[in-house]
Length: 197
Image (tube, rainbow, N blue to C red; front, side):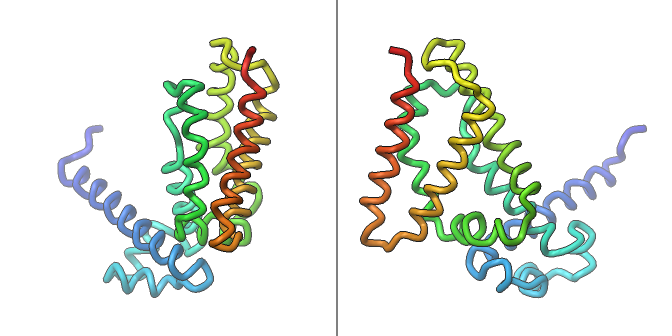
């Protein structure tokens, strides 16, 4: 059965409403934190009724999960076409996330206290680890790097980066350039070690 024009417009309007809720929620969660942001804050920014919001999300925690998903999707790189050289050049920019106050508040400070470890794992798995694992496997096939177990390596490196971002975001501002330089040196040393000689 075909969807009517009116039904299609309603679907599109619903998707736009959901995007608007998530955009405002991301801004508020980034600025005020999860605990400091209420459903009423989100509604106030949107000039929306509770019923309209609850049509799309069952609670604040569900909104937060979707915001975390958006953050992970935004950090997805073009793994299918990226070369090893481009990957190495992009590593220094990973640490820029520690300078993004919204990312730090949502992903570094709040995510691990709001979401379950299974939820966090699924976010990393779907948007970061699996694509990165496929990239590593492709680099092995292209004889760019030594073959290692890609599943474990992808998990290990994502954990390393997450821990590095936490460290950098909690480092005093005057010490950040040195910490960033050290983190970059460590990860580049590992990446260079992986190359076929």
